[in-house]
Amino acid sequence: MKANLNLGSVFGIKIKVHWTFFFLFAWIVFGELKRGGSTGRILFNIAFVLAVFLCVVLHEFGHALTANRFGVKTEKITLLPIGGMARFDKIPESPKQEILIVIAGPLVNVAIAILLYFIVPVHELFNHSFTDTYEIFVSFTFQNFLFFLFIVNVGLALFNMIPAFPMDGGRLLRALLALKMNRAKATQIAASLGQFIAVLFLLVGLLYNPFLIFIALFVFLGAYGENQMVQHMALLKGHTVEEAMLLNISTFNPKDSIDLIVNKLISGTEINFAVVEEGKVKGILYHRQIIENSNKNILIEDVMDTNFKTVKNTDDLKSIYHLIYFEKQRFLPVVNQGKLVGAIDAINLNEYILLQSKLAYLK
Ligand code: ZN
Picture: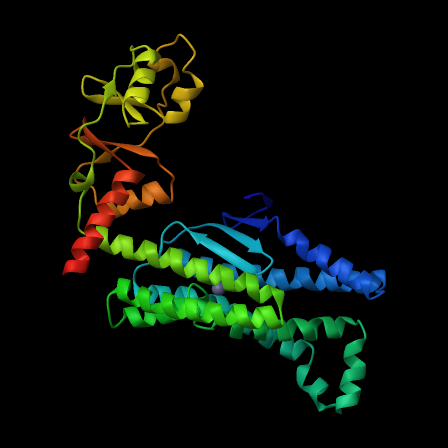
């Protein structure tokens, strides 16, 4: 499920709240009600969670605004009950840039903690005797609110620095390793350590804290996914579209009847088609459009998608990986000097990756 609540944009970056976030509020309200808590306590806790997530948003902006300095744009920041996530349009490949982008997030929490340390003031609280301090903290005062926020920011900075890739600490480790070795190998090491720590999180989570279970899953799957992407990118580096593209593709004319494409769909294995006139691509007919219009007596030009992307035979396959997996392009016609020479899609790109990984294994 991808239902996110849009909170608007700051510095051109969309801020979204994941739907599961509302379970957190439900959990607080029910938890307090079960303990016989008052409305005041419930509001205190909800306001506190909102303040914590404001700090999480500021942490993400630390990453985003630093990334922006290196020309990496942030598309959106998503808030999950387990934390925030900034989505960049590309991943900075220079280790030095990545180090700065990574540490900017936790540094924001350090800055907030230092500010709160002086506002609260924290050291005075610690000068009281243990029983006095306990007395102070059980009451729901604004000072306590700020003190707990101080503790949370210290915790956020420390927790994020745990080297569990793709958490900040793990990214920092990868970037530091990448100063000494190639990025694919550095990512492999960081991801393995990340998955190991995720298993520890899971064990601790099962015993003490259900939130850690979610974080464990997030880290484990995130490490797997991102490591795989980096390994694939490394395999594709230096290879061009020409090496991987489909050559024997069926093409159609804009004036052809849709029946022709329907017959081709049934009798062959191709599912997306380029529409061509005098060698030039005029549109694409995707599988879904063909099915939706299959019972109509119309021409291909009436239903073809004219808002499409083409790639060149000399383009880098890494950029195609990006187009297919991040921009969700299903089918890309390949042109040479404006004329159609082939096509590339996720299936044949994957096949090419599999073949390359076999070759790399033999090396
Ligand atoms: Zn971070």
